[in-house]
Length: 121
Image (tube, rainbow, N blue to C red; front, side):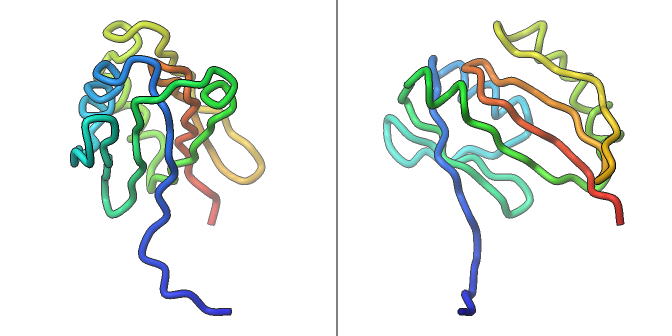
């Protein structure tokens, strides 16, 4: 079966919606408000929906992988934003090398785990 796919947009929750909205704007995503309880955040043609909804088990098990073209440059630029110092519960790891490529991790203010990675050619 062939699909003419244009995007895939996961839904993630937020423990403190306004704080998470600001976090993702600071991270460089462009926000489009969908309703008072949901926004679409996009960058470079990809996006996700942030909801004013918090279920601990759901958030604690939510992971997103964002592939970037240069993980070292991306990590260096993200590090200058000093997000862990500005937002409670935000954690940033160093880059690690895996057999498939490189990645680092960022936990958002609610606990959603982001993987930023670059695959080997």
